[in-house]
Length: 186
Image 1: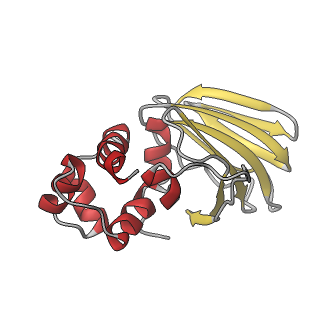
Image 2 (image 1 turned 180 degrees about the vertical axis):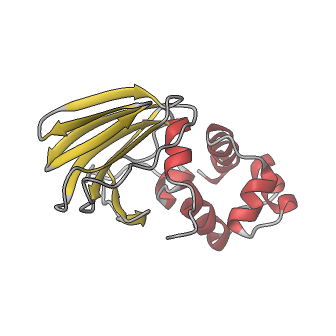
């Protein structure tokens, strides 16, 4: 099983479109050590694997390719970005990542911060109402409604009221990298 770790590490890094230097910065592991891990010249130690699994947001079992146990449940660990609670619903999938997001209440008169990046997003409103800005347009989505859009268009979403709203969010790999990167106001 350990023989397959090196190609898995390289494939994960390449799927995330990270350089060895970027990964070294995020993990605190030297570029040289990362390179040797990916080439198989160094056997992976638990402390290094834990740091890599944390950056890639995968379990150690997924990282090393351990056989899946009988329990297929995903055990999400919520985290927070820009005031939003984000709960991962998928394991490592190279194409799409699913998240449940809880959007805090938002002043209906306040503007929506937008951004652009490569990728594609799909959202489905579970509860509450969501204001979705797409380019210069803005729409309100009710519970049970969905939207899909190219993320190269300026976009953003917030709760449409002072009450929280919940959405399911599917992000292409490029979109996932941008939405979940470290932000200064963690």
